[in-house]
Amino acid sequence: MKNPIDPAASALSAVACFSAGISQLQQAVDNPQMRTVITGAADLIFAMKGRLILSGVGKSGHVARKLAATFASTGTPAYFVHAAEASHGDLGMIQNDDVVMLLSWSGETGELADIIAYAARFDVPIVAITGKAEGTLARRAQYPIVLPEAQEACPHNLAPTTSTLLQMAMGDALAITLLKMRGFTEESFRN
Image 1: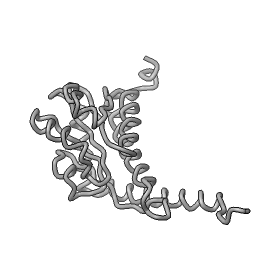
Image 2: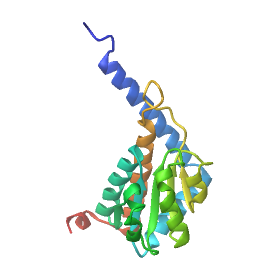
Image 3: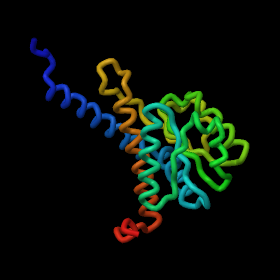
């Protein structure tokens, strides 16, 4: 039996959805309020004495893990802390000279609550990459980077596809911004 789906047409449709999401992100980043938040977040991370701690759960956690590797390889000391493990002793890895970057599309990820509370108690600033301005994460972050609401490529608008792409793009954009701020060169990659 032949599958009624045209795989190439389906892939093209998904890529068009991703492209629309990136266009929305570009417009959002060009907004003066968003520019102020991004500038504040970049300045904070640039000036920190410790490390950039990234965390998230589910697909956002996978993106956070990748972003930690990107930041670390481009001159910003960074590592990933698993949110569930943080609640079982790994919070001690976060120091008050660090900056925490938390990713959650809904901004209501329960597993991040202990990290948020710990950061507040020890005055560790939070940068959020989220999709909901009214979410707990955006409200608790010093620098809430709120991404535009974009259509997922999933025909049910459920599987995180465009949203994770936007999280990745925003995080990578910050990593490249910091690379430039630090004067990180091609030679720096080799050392």
